[in-house]
Amino acid sequence: MPENDKPEGDKRESDGLRSDGARSDKPASGATTQPLTREALAQAALKVLERDGLAGLSMRRVAAEVGVKAASLYWHVRNKQELIDLLNDAIMAEAEPPPREGGWREQFHAYCWRYRRLLLDNRDAAKVVAGRLVTGPNLLGLLEDQLDRLREAGFSDADAAMASYLLAAFVQGFVLQEQAPISAAEALGTSRREIVTAAGNRFRALPTDTFPNLVELADDLTEPDMDARFEFCVQRVLDGLAALLPQQEQSTESTAVSSDESSTADRTR
Image: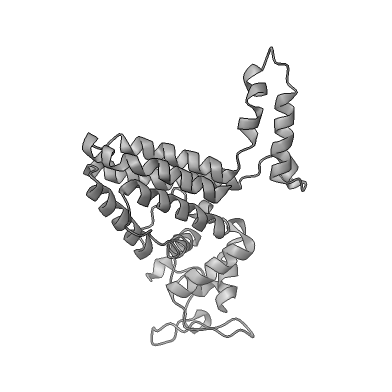
């Protein structure tokens, strides 16, 4: 690490650099540690994220997790944002591409569902990855796989690149909304279902002469759960992508659509 990038006080043996120039990451008092690597930092950051959330992620807490002083981290990452880049790719390490079975639509339908589950299963994961382009090995592998499938399906190079972006942005955005507080009542302990039910009752009680659509569609607005909403959105996104394909490729995929929707509907009931 260049001298001008070193944090204040991070010099020589007192902060982990021996007189021969080699690193010697010293554990915090009473702690034991394995050799410090970027991979170890990423795994420690994952633990802190799960325990404290993104708002609670700090260099100090990650350092404590691996048993070193915070200054030692700066030999591996320059700042917290670079640590979050490591964390981003560590999250993507858990992503598993679906089997190459069926057509492109079936495969990317599975991609979307798997990605949503990954983001929901890791605390604040959507906040970590949304809007971030980190060219770590795990993301690179996923992007290569997606682009290969899209080009093989007949998408133009430009459409394949934009489709990959669209699918990621859609799932990330959906999960961010899904995990956001639905109202102030949730912070007070009211369940999301209770809040939605109360909203439905409110819609039904509105004057029909002023709000005829809200009254008549109260059930449709409030009864579907998040799985049903996600499935509807996925299918519409895939519909839009299918329209970009030449007619011949579109027709080969059309038979998979209805079975795709019905199988997911059965799973989410």
